[in-house]
Image (cartoon, one colour):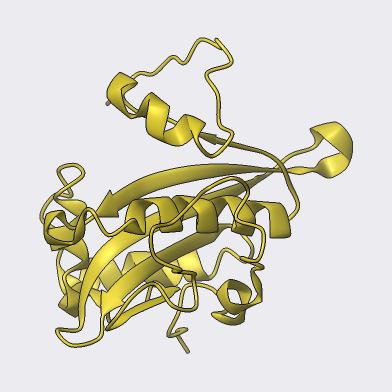
Length: 182
């Protein structure tokens, strides 16, 4: 039987937003109340029909993925316990997704079999930008990684995004990032 959400939604509700870690919001938004008619929740198996790929297309080329392919990949990722934490913000009026963030957890042998977190695929729908949803999902990702026991959290970003991510305590530690794309 497939899971409805990619991870247990209780994890998001349990995050403590009393300490916003130096991040200020113009509105008092949290993971439990991201704004009027908005709801933060884990990615759902039904989100193919709620504009998930339309949202991802504002970040990168998501490719032509069928509903069946999405559901198959969702089931595969959901079966990897404690690895993929994709959460979204849904407009509860239109039932369309307006923001998304992924925290991927890598289990390591070093540092006493620790965990490393990676933030990936941070995107806010262009019609919803300016509402501080980007700040909310990155802070949520940081708090989630800490709750999951990650010893460090990393992300890749373009040069122009560095000042935004530095607000969250992330820094360019001058490691050489290398990549080969196939």
